[in-house]
Image: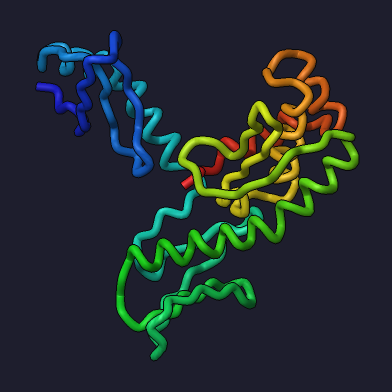
Length: 224
């Protein structure tokens, strides 16, 4: 008897086909119209190798998933640094990065507050660090954006709207400097080309000839 992997099944009348995906924690999710349990079990058996390889790939990604233990590390500008938890009297949770060490100060143990403070740190650092990169490459490429915003997203590192508004994932601060610059060049190129056809990639390559290496590095990181 074959042991089937654990999963979460989402049924939707709007779907015509069955899809396998993974959530932010690496858990298997099945999305489908109404189907039988036998169908699901057969699908899981047929896709067993793909599921295993996908989980291994997810596990290898550099991430900020916290275990709230001494083993926790945070990525910052391409390197990972230990995260130390320390109690203090103030009720306000505070995160500091000094001497290659992250220290999270707290008075009351609250994992949600810890996550919010870490996200707040990345957002502030993104605004301070990425905006100058955008301004630099905008001038070099001769492409003007309407505005720049920063927010944490689950899937995208960056985006360019039809009105040339740029948005960047605050988790970009986990990435090496050259990869951050690639994302900025990529989104600025979308101001001229709203697609991923040859002309778009030629423009990206003009300003970053080794962009494929940056794309490969980017795949090592998680947006979490």
